[in-house]
Structures are given as structure tokens and as C-alpha cells.
Length: 265
Image 1 (cartoon, one colour):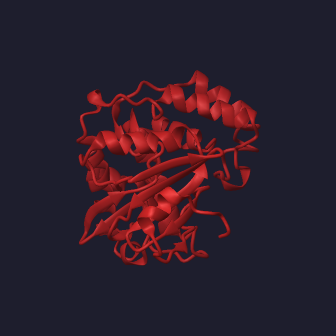
Image 2 (image 1 turned 45 degrees about the horizontal axis):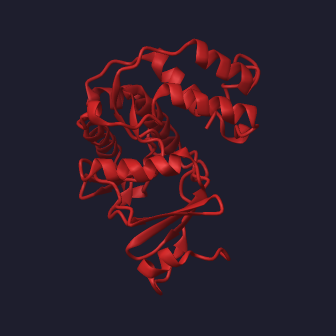
């Protein structure tokens, strides 16, 4: 990477060596140092929300510290302390599905324990998400290469414009809890079979609990089915396996809604 790292960052990481990380589907450049992670991306409401939500949480859930958030020429440099443990998409957990599913449930419950009534941030709320989704559609930012096969085309929506119109008209009643906003397996770290941290926090904040449940179910299904490793299948996962851990019933309407909303991000 030829990008010049700002002095504010170098003052902390010094001469530590780093390597690039491209696990997951983030559009960020990520450099891994021995004790830190540097995320480089276009400044946005999400980069600012990540900085603010970490400060507000103040240790309520395990997230990285952010010693430096610096913006230069529209680029946000977020230096975070490094979370210990392994991502939940690691082979160790994919080969131990019962433990993986228990860890996902633990992660969700950990977030839901936060008193959301005291959280002042709104980037994660459905009204704001729909505004951002509409902006993405109108600016041709929807990644049509990474949508579910059934979302568009025969039996689905004609195009992203038709989808955003449907989402705006069919907003579900919200059951507000504290959410991650992108609860997929690479964003959750585990150490000694306990949650050690959450990363990629730009969408974190108050939202319907199905925002996280829906993404978690999809991530479990795709990872167990081998979508990200050349087709190696690990386990015949069903949605009910996670819902039983959470002691919740399936809400098909909300599940579909929040999966469809995510297609526009």
C-alpha cells in the first residue's frame, strides 16, 4: 500500500510492521499491527458513528478503543486497539457448529443488555437507514454482484428503485434494542468460547432486534454452506437452531425485510 499514513497515526504505531486484511465485505483498507488496527475509508456518517458509539459505550460491551480518529481530504483514518481471539468464521468454530451458534446467541444477548433508552445516536435507526439506502440507490451504489439471487429478477424486484420504494412503504413496527448493525461472523471475535469483541461498528446503535438476527442467520447459513471458501460445506444449518438458543420465534416478515434492506448497502 502506497498511501501515506498520517503523522497522528505514526506517533502511536511507530515502526511496527503491518499487513493488509481483506476478510469480510468491507470497502475499507485495513492494516493490522501487533497492537492496533488501522481502518482507512471515505469519511461518512458511519465512520463518525463508529467513533462516537465507542466513546459512548465506555466499556459496556467489548469493542476496540479508538485512540485516533483523523480525517484528511475526505478520508477517515480510524486507529483501533486490536481485539484478541478469533473471528467466528474461523475454521475452529465452523467445525464446531453447536459452539458457534451458542456464541452468536451470546453475542446478540450481550448487545441487548445495553440500556438503549440512554443512547443518543440515530444513524442505526430505520428512518436513517432508509434515507441512506435511498441515497445509495439514487447514486448507483448498490452492489448488484453481491445480492441474494432471489432479490432481483424473476419472482423478485425489478431493480433497486422498486425495492427501496417497497421498503419505504412496508416499514415494520420496531422492537428497539441495542444492535451491531452488521452482525456477520467476521465482525465477532471469540476467545476461550466467550465473546471477546465486536468490530466494524459504523451501523451500531438502536434498531429493531431483527436487524441483527436476520444478518446473523444469513451469515451462519452462508458460512456453513461454504459460500466464502470455494464451496466446502460444514453443516446443515437451519434458522431454528439459533432461534432456539435465543428462545425466540421466527418472524418471517421482519427477517425478509431486514435482509432486503441490507441488499442496498
